[in-house]
Image (cartoon, rainbow, N blue to C red; front, side, top):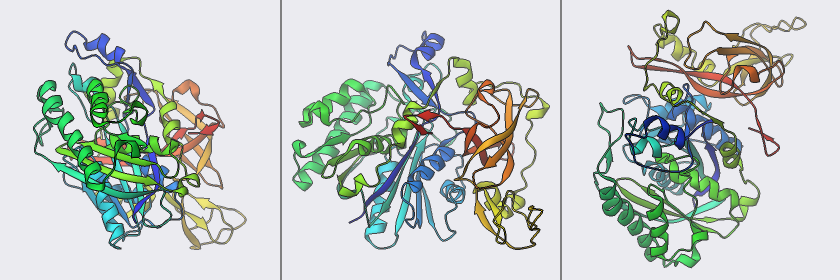
Length: 484
């Protein structure tokens, strides 16, 4: 039976306290919620977060073959250009991989997982990577601005050595007008919260859960964890009580720590639940949006061999944004002067296509004769004792760690988070190249700082509708004795 082979998660480094938002916009918004929410850096979006979660997921499952990738989001960078194909290239998956984008509904994450399980069960695919990510924007002063958070989650679906098997599902489809965005909308549109809560959120989730329990003859006592988005915290707990679940069975919806992460929300909570699960546990994963979808997973003994604790590390590794204006700039809501240095030139798309492995998957070359790695790829080995010509093999740097050989603070370059930081990275195993440095402050760097590569948005060419992606270096942080 098809199921989950591994899982991954990504939560951006930056968080903003809801009290900070309230101090800036509180006179417009009476919606109160405790805690903080996760927000993307200026060089992140749903696609880059999906790559981060996907890398984490694949790393935990090697050497499983991945021949499918489904990307679920409502905030894709393109309306006509497949994001899943970009993600597959960044992850260095083979060209024969089957890719698909799923969107337009917040239940797209669970829908992608169901489709992946069906493809594996039917024998069409060996391993399907499901990535779900969202970075939705609420208009300043709205309740959505307080509620929405940014995050990503990934599941690798396969048929062998699964850590949690899919036992069943139940779906409810309804064209319910609660939240929507037309093609020309940047911010979420919504009807009154009371309407959403009483006519959509509570009845749809209740129907999906009760429908699944009835379909498979389950009782609430048989369930170890029940997972569904916490759009309204009081009603979130009331749904569980009404259906007969005890408080300890209800998974934390992460609203006060991350926020509502849209399509990623149920899968992110599933990653948190799997970190603490044990063989035999029954987990119900429920999404909400255009109805509801409930999936039933049973944890297998394989969980003890491939338990991933990345979620907790991502949750704990954080930096607070103390200025509301910086949050607005990072999200492009508040326009700021960039000067002539901030102008974006014409993207050479044919060149980007020819060099896609170098740019998107960070693939260089390694000399077959002496083993020295090179980035960008070279024809002639740089080793003075070798000098071999055209004796190279492909060598990927994206999954390698390294240290800063040198770095520069550029106070003249245009960046939403000055100064611009870049430096020469010495990779473990060999190779040196210059990269931008992100997710850190200038005074935190020093020569020898350990770094890991991270896929980021390098620029947005708004005049031509092009998002440019590539790799940057990110300093490692210690959380729980592990580098993150």
